[in-house]
Image (tube, rainbow, N blue to C red; front, side):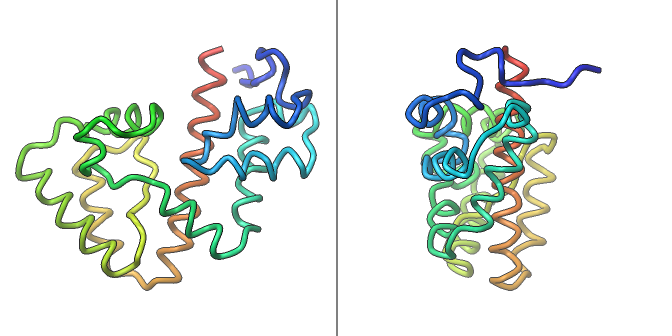
Length: 179
């Protein structure tokens, strides 16, 4: 099996100017191009032309961010099967990810359950429920939602950050596969 890289792009991530890098990768973290900017400023090498290495560096930038910056990234994510999804207002990546998990095919009862859980989760934690939906179906997502509602705030915040990093890794891998 060959290793996917992002270096088929012109230029490769490791050779991008800041502006070009943000143009290509600023959307990997939902409405948070500062993560890509921080990764670029940390320094990119040819190693970062591999999606997993770039994901690792970008994830580190999020983990090292202030709590306020982390919360802003969490809050930039849409509700799962929420009103934005139904209105077609999600980013291209979020639309594809949610559709891949079948969230665009919810029954009215399932949609109502997602709305109820989204509201309860936001009320308890102050931010949306985040889960990397790749490889999951809507039933597994609902189960995870119900389970995680019992967690404490610190645990859920850390879980959300880890899930966001996982989402970014999936997005970078998908881009490398499209090349």
